[in-house]
Image (cartoon, rainbow, N blue to C red; front, side, top):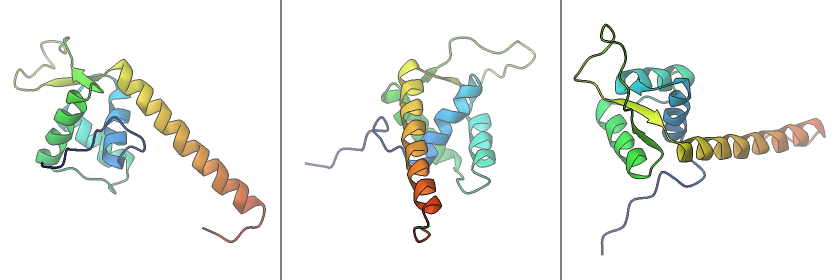
Length: 120
């Protein structure tokens, strides 16, 4: 029996998944805009080639974390070839849970540092 793929809907989120969800908090976006936001927010540490990006988008969609947007931009800004994606309520809740999880880890590390524990 072949191994099943890991769900994108489980914590901890992979950095690319987290950054894609985070990019969609700015509003509906097409793939190129999502990719640019991921690269910008990660300061270039996370780069996604188009194939990887669209495979992740498909998995996020299958897991119910993002969906295809029903509304399109104005006609002047719209390109019929592009698909626009939106964050679902499940995706938003998972993003919030992951953000809180990471904030908790940072708080622990800061407390340890403040008490004079050896640096991590």
